[in-house]
Length: 294
Image (cartoon, rainbow, N blue to C red; front, side, top):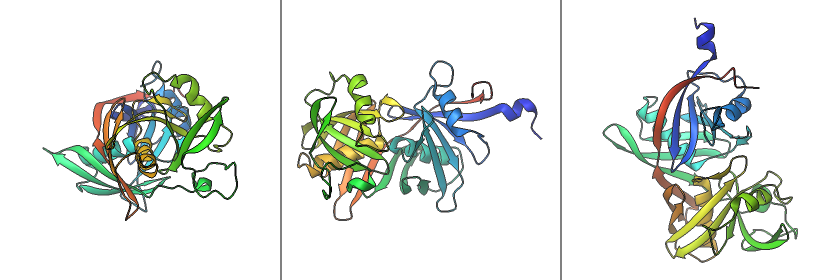
């Protein structure tokens, strides 16, 4: 039987995918009573552990594991490409499975992952991210003209300025915007305006992109509920799909994010997007979450 001290103590692992960092909890062993409140406390970089959110690794009846994720503001997230690579590394490296091909249940559907293992540790993870969703009502995006089937290079007025966006869901909603200067962009100002724009009923993740050549694109991302992050895996996939749809790149693209590079490939015949990238353990720890949860 656990003591009162042990009841309030939670074991965790801090991990990141290209700097997109989450706190991971093995909920096959641990229990979190109030995940949204726990996510807000844990994510606080001054009073908590510090992260872009909380990811709980749960048992699943439909797949090998379930990924239950929360953003830094406590809102539930459907899917995280960097996060799911870290889930794969965690379950293999920490002995929850010995399989190098696994399935993970998410709110954005079941994802299939292949692990590259060296000396007993996961080095790279290739994720079958599934089919990109382009129908606006399924992203969701409210159309200006009812009847439009897709939102590709479509004009949109945000904060009095016209932008052209391509809307894609990779299990969560994304708006891809092309800009001339990614590095000099005032993302702290424009990011929230896109996130909360009236035509995005579930809010939106926004990628600001500059195409460098036929095989390379550079991006920064404003994630709903978290703000700017160093990397977003689903966002990189959405950028690749957008670049290909707009005829700007080939079907295999290196996406350069603040935290590093991801390789994205869209098999258009099968209509499947693949993402390949690293996952890293930062440290393991234990925290009393009762004092910080309000």
